[in-house]
Length: 274
Image 1 (cartoon, one colour):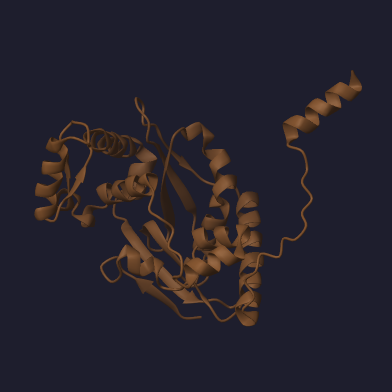
Image 2 (tube, helix red, strand yellow; image 1 turned 45 degrees about the horizontal axis):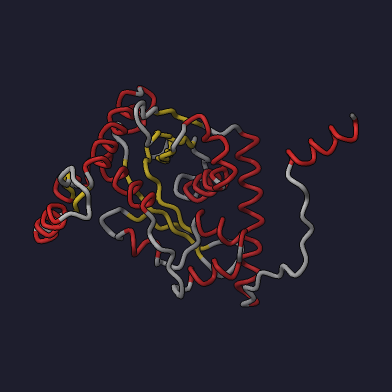
């Protein structure tokens, strides 16, 4: 199966997301709402950029030596962004083709980068790596394409993904909430088509974005979690193939059964026992 490798200089971030190929984030949206995913994949709806997304993109750029971070960004004055001082500084930066970053965000970004580099495992994953390398190919499950963009790649030995979080100890919950196990499985599967079918190790480099510690931890998912992710991806791609062929993107949720949350079920059990 032919796979296209896309250097970061070949496609902008906007062009990558407008390619019409299915990535892990869009697949997660599909599992929530096929109709919403179809609106996004066809370009009829574009999810708004959030402050968290903007912060994460800037952090990726700071760690990527080829991103020219210092040429693209500068710290803004440490003042309220509603003041004339900020407005004037932002206008000066825009005239120079530079994006202004609030002083508190600037400090946090650099503290986070320092924390990543101070973690020997994370630093070893950064050294000699390629950044933001894209992969796109036809899906065997139907008439559509799939894609991924590796934050950090060592050909062909390791894939790593940068994640920012409020609390590194809570990242385990983020994996299931945001479908990161599916992301890891999808990336490994797609990239395997570029390296003779080998499933490369996949790590998350997780960095706190909250003061004062900005802790960094490298986290791998065990083989059982990756297997679950692969099964969920395979089922989703089969369903995307079916819906692509039928052009049926309705949600089909006319009747649902809702169970009580675990805490309420446990409390009810305690009441019955007592």
